[in-house]
Length: 178
Image (cartoon, rainbow, N blue to C red; front, side):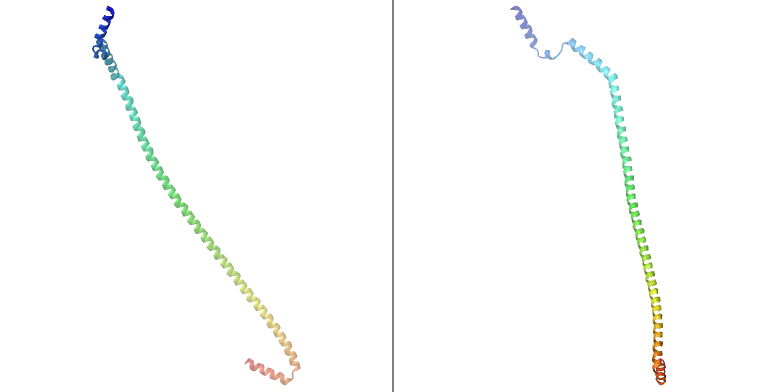
């Protein structure tokens, strides 16, 4: 029982102080601080500069990419402005071509109408002159026929009339003419 009692006393002594549970033994504490200082020195001397260099190169790379993106954006905006200008110029050129085509079509239409009018007037003139010529020819034929008939009738009438009647008729004709 003695052993049990000693064990309990030793345990009670150890459990009496709660801070002893949190703090390691002094030799472990010194060894831990020395190890931390050595690791901290190596990290500060070699790892930290390498890490800073990597971060700086990454930062400059990102800045370069941002600058390149801004230049690309400006170039794209310039290209878009040129494209818009070309499109507006193309639209105005298309409209000009359409207007010129309409004007040319209108001129051709007017020329064709004028030519058709000239041809129609020429046909009318020819028809009038042909009609006049035919009228003259028919009138001449008719006058010749009338003259021939008149001569035949007058010969028949004159042969059946006496000389006094013929003389009266001639005098009356001359009187009507004069």
